[in-house]
Length: 548
Image (tube, rainbow, N blue to C red; front, side, top):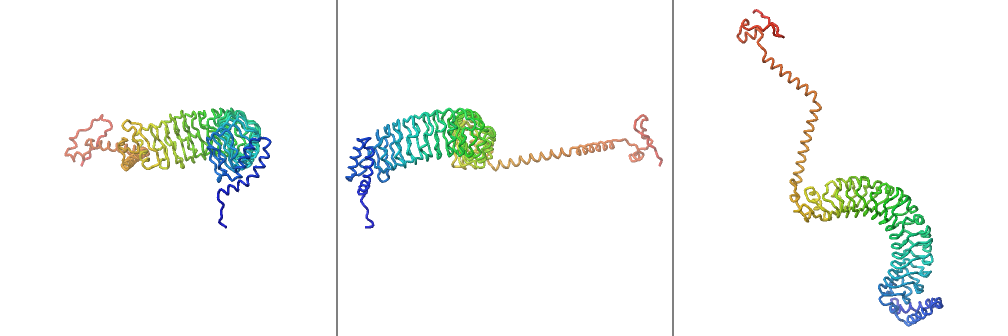
């Protein structure tokens, strides 16, 4: 029938019957080397051929799924690799057990694509242990006790793309140690004891894109070894003991996009340390010993988008601290215990900034007016857990922000923060701000206070606007008058003199003596009766008497 389907147990029996010849050939190969192993597998083969379910061979504490071909054994107290699993499994996870070595049983699992042996007790890996895993893509050997590997350790892993050797006891990397892994894309060697890397240690890793060498014992950057990694996109070399970055420290890494130097011990960076990194997008300098922002050293990283500078010995951010970083989108300065102030103009060269994080800086109390102005794309600002007491309204354009975090600061709530209270009421996604002082407002939320609580005498915005207009008009009028007086001061002085002279002349005319006959006649006095002026009076002339 067209819709006929065999029962599930028949499917298993069918698969088992087809597997028998394969196992028989394998047994012939290992017979001479391990008779006991052949005996055990023969017993399992007999059980399969009798129609027993493959799931019956799943070790205790393990989970075996014949449909998804996944076996998981976590904390199962296994001390050796299981030998009777379905040979078609693709994912084998034996994590957190007590396995000390990889034995010959690995050759039966040729279909593996993912193998996780992390958190075991592996002390060594015999040569060619993975020579039958042609399809293996991920191998996790992290958190073991491996002290050395060689170029024969991973022989046969031609398809491997991820190798995790994190948290072992490796001390050095010899030349061509990974040369048998042509397709490897990610290599994790973090948390080992590596102090020496030979110049050609990474030879053959032409496809490598991600390399972890963090938390080792390197005293200098292995520049020569890195130059072989032309495709590398991410490099993590923090938590070492570099102290100094020389010129061209990462020469040859032309495609590097992420460089992590977190906790590398840097106190000095050469001017051209980052030369040859034209595509770098993210730089982590967190947890070093830098006392100033390495402005000149960073200036060549014109495509940098993320910069982490927290936990350094920075005291202040000066004007143009990040000059040249025109594409910077995020800057994070967290936990800089000596940082005290942010100067106006610190970020004025970074017009593409979207996120600024200045958090957990216990001495940061001064953020100058306009420090965060002129950043049209700024949307996220975190000023959490600093020593900020107050903020000016001109610090940033708050209405453009999507997130603002000012929690855990000793905020002094007064009328200077009325603008911030109104902003908090407009933006629901801003964090709440509690007052630390004055005492009567302590622990109260700024958002819940009104203008009177903050001590504002004039808090009506319309009233403030009217008063401002009147004051401006008065000042403008006075200034205009002063300007006019100053401009026409000479002509006004002359007019004033003329005015005084004319007024004095009129007064003299009003008080002058009667000197003419007509005046005498008008006043009813005969000229003969008017006394003649003294002859010695200066400036007086005799008045001629004319007979009528």
